[in-house]
Image (cartoon, rainbow, N blue to C red):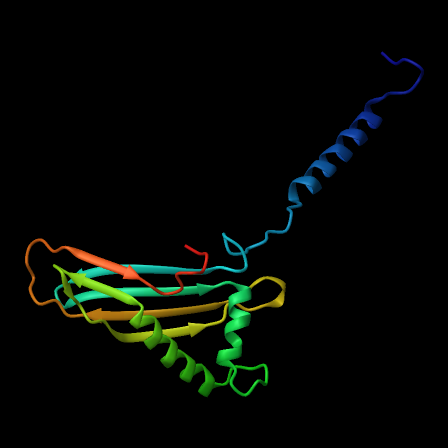
Length: 167
C-alpha cells in the first residue's frame, strides 16, 4: 500500500546505510595512545630479579630513566658536547655507570656479604615522549655462594637513586 504516491523504502535504506557508515568510521577511530612512564617523565625506575642457582646467585638489574633524567644524564655521557653519543662515550659511560650501580647493590646470604661482579651490561636509548630519548641500562651480576644449604636467608638492598621517584 502506498501513501502519497511514493515508497519511503529507498529513503529509509539510504538513511540506514549512512548510519552504518558513520558507525563504522566512529568505531575505527581510536584516540592516540600516549606511552609515558607510569609515574611521570621525571622518574628513575629500577628492577631487580634475584635467581639463586648451582653456580651462585644471579642478579638482573635494570635502570629505566624517563625523559628528564635522561636529558640530565646526557651531560655526563656526551663528553664532547656534540649532541651525539659516540661509541667511545657509550663504552666509557657504561663501564663507569655499571661499577657505580654495582656498588649501590647490597646482597647477603645468611648474614654474609656476597660480592657481586658484573658479567654483562647493556645501554640503550629507547624513544620517549616529545622527541626525547629515555635511558635503559641492564646489568647482569653474579655472586658466589659459600655453601648450598637447604635454607638460605637472603637480604638484598638497592641503594641507588634513593632520592628519586620511581618503582
